[in-house]
Length: 58
Image 1 (tube, rainbow, N blue to C red):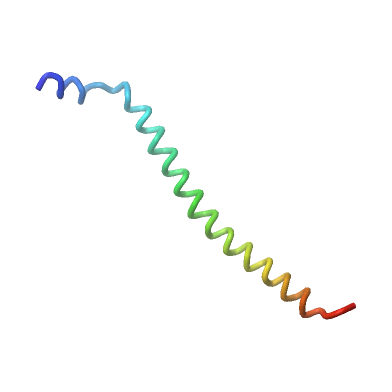
Image 2 (spheres, rainbow, N blue to C red):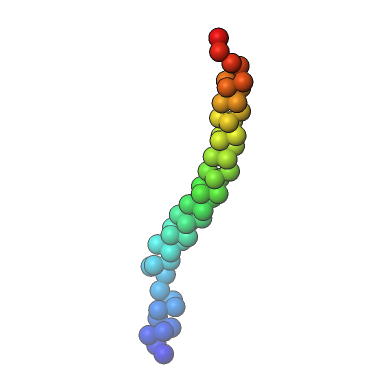
């Protein structure tokens, strides 16, 4: 029982856990954000391709 209480009071590993949680939240945000950005970018490139293709030969 004393070991469990001592383990719960130990704060030395708290910062490592907090940094790990922070890094995971940033990673999730980047994955979601870049997914949306890539869809938008693909749409822009598709519009450019359609415009160039529809212009016909010069």
